[in-house]
Length: 324
Picture: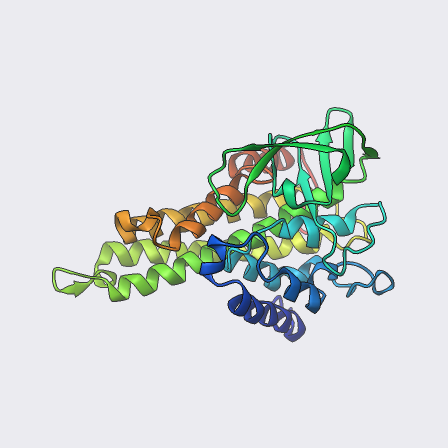
């Protein structure tokens, strides 16, 4: 069997990459909250998972994976996953979603603050009583400190909401898999930037990339990325589209993907910082944006440790077979 991406899936990813290179350069991360969103909306990116009858493209999460990786590679600000992926699974009617006019943020269980909540027209909030859909006019926000300057966090309160019951569960599952795809993109970019720096930076009369210790660290990241990426692909296939039922193994597969992607992004960030040295976290170097994104997305929708615990429980308790 061919487990590779189709030409159409790769073409969508390449198109998104070109748009982000043109409209979301590193300089934009310092000045804009949602660079390239208008251009991505013009491509139909935010309606990719919606049916054609709702103005969408009718794609599956697996179709969108290469494009989601590119949003991570570009460190695209804003609630990208929540708007392009999670919102498509909600039972509520969201006119304007496909055009990018509606922005969505999610506050899942175990997270204290919602990212980019000030940009959101709608918030999906987990409370003890279940899932709630909160509209912008009913929400109260208090900014909180976060590690990622392009992903500000907010404490959320609200006066009125729509009870979604358990219907938001698949949306959060899909958003977790999509976040794992973004982490793969972040790791790939950190690796590429670090390899380029190691080739150009000299010490003791030689490029630091020629040192065996540096080679081993970079190789470890490259291998880890190649092992984690297929797990994310598997998770996207297990979750399925907004109008299909997830496989019985979806929860297990998503946890495996998020744990692996979070760990490889953390490894890529650590190696990048070690190879660059102290300059790596300075204000002047753009690398700091990708370091922060690796750390912030690694904790979004559950840390690697939390997902490994869920994965272990699924295996020990006799969950679905290996190939359901």
